[in-house]
Image (tube, rainbow, N blue to C red; front, side):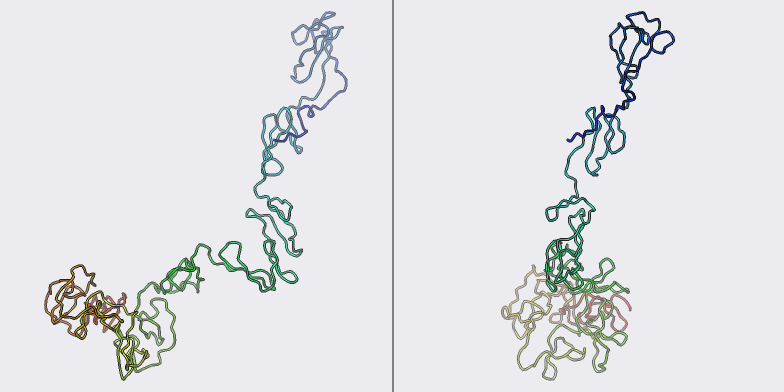
Length: 427
């Protein structure tokens, strides 16, 4: 605590340097019926030479030999004066520094001496919150803020000053936030403004995503530090799961079977008349005219060939059903057989089944019998009837989870009826 020189005693303004004599005769206001050697003052009798408090409580009176009363006449202002303002004893008030507190005591003004929050230390000098001062580079200006010293980043002759450091034009350096990057240009310092609560190593779905009205290129939105690519417009849904086949809508070609419904941009006009990019195709390699295509449609869905049929080609990225399949007398662990590069796990003569298999919930036709799952009899299920309703479908197909309209009928996946699904309504 710090005590200032201003005190109560200093506030007593002397109104007279000499004593004010108050007569004790009957005509005076000081005493009544006083006799020589005594004074009668405010109903009390005092002996000559005796001192006593004045009625104002702050001056002192004394009884004179002639019976009169004399009193000091100092001003009775009690309290403190600080910065031109009067305070009563016991009053508290803000210190002029804006962060400490002062009190008026009988000994004067006393203030706390806590270090003020918001003070900044720059180049060995302390500054108050809100102060502005020259940067050490001689061409920028700094200010004391609640976050600390902040300086402008105007390029000085030969470079930039940023947070008290000199940077050369063209130099790139980390932003103070720890996740953005700044660079020194001829116009000054410029920094990226990526949200810092993100993980650039996050694995994200390759689908457009709308977050807070902004469109992002992946399913992570801004969480993987991607920048938005524009506003969210229209009624598209970037979370749709679409078939990986070109589709033609409104004369424009789109990269998936959803067309613009999943917010994809067109990749060009629909110029090819001989193929139909909207075809729903099985996810199996197909050999047509000596070249191999990535789907069962061959070139009919406008796909280009991916190789020559002279050598066996498999695709380990194919999505396959979790059910045993028999191809050329050999048993494979998925419905793709060898097409996804799987090795056979044995011959097909084994009649054993595994009831713990996880199977897709689709009807499957095996050896003329219909089974309630994509595993057929491999999971020990019994047939539920004969396969007679749709002999041309393949329930083991791996299909995209998006509704598809074929011949005016709506199906629950991108395969339409090709995977033996029943329609779910008209379209």
